[in-house]
Image (cartoon, rainbow, N blue to C red; front, side, top):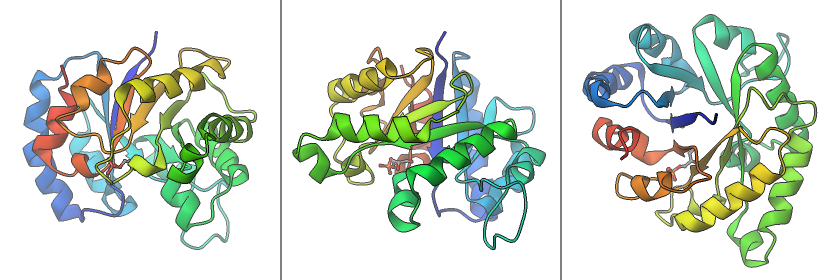
Length: 241
Ligand SMILES: O=C[C@H](O)COP(=O)(O)O
C-alpha cells in the first residue's frame, strides 16, 4: 500500500530560534491530523539537532536537504549519512532542481547520493522535473525518463520517495494543473519496478490547492517549499481533506 508523505522543504530559511518558534505554533495543529499520513520537516542542517529534540516522540519525521555519497573524508562543506542518522534524520531530499542548477549536481552524483542515503538507513526523496523550455518543446516525458534511468541505478525502490517537481512551478505561484501532475506522476510510476513507491507533487503547493492536488489518484503527497514556512499554512496543507 502506498504511503502518504507530506514534506516541508525549508531550503535556506529559519535559524534555530525561528525553528523553535515555528514548532510552538505548528505542533498543536497536529492533534487533528489523520494517522494515514506522514509529516516530514526538512530544515537547514543547523536546525536539525534542535528540531530532532523537539520532534522526539511526535508523529513528525525529520528530513535533511542533502547528503554526501562518501561515508567520511576530506569534503569541505559536505555532510555524511552517519551524521544525519545519528541525530534522528529519517528522510533526505536528493537531486532537488536547485542543487542541480546552482551546485552542479548531475544524475551521476544524484545516484551516488541516493545509494549513500539508503546505505545509512535513510529514505531519499528523489526530485525530478522539467524546465519550462523543455515542457514547451514537448520534452517532459523524455527528460523525466532519462532522469529516472540514470538516478535510480541500483537504488532499492522499496525504500524510496520520488517528488515530481516541474521546475517552472517552483516558487512561482504557477502550479501545475493537478490533472497534469497526476498524468506525469502516473508516467513516472509506470517506469518503476515497484508500483507502490510514494510519489509526491511539488511546486507552489498552497493551502488553497492542496485538497485538489491530494484528490488526484496517482499523487501520494507533496513537497512544499514556501508554504511550509508558516505554521498555519503548513498545518492546513498537512491537514488536507
Ligand atoms: O522543495 C520544494 C519545492 O522546490 C517547491 O517549492 P515551492 O512550494 O516554494 O514552490
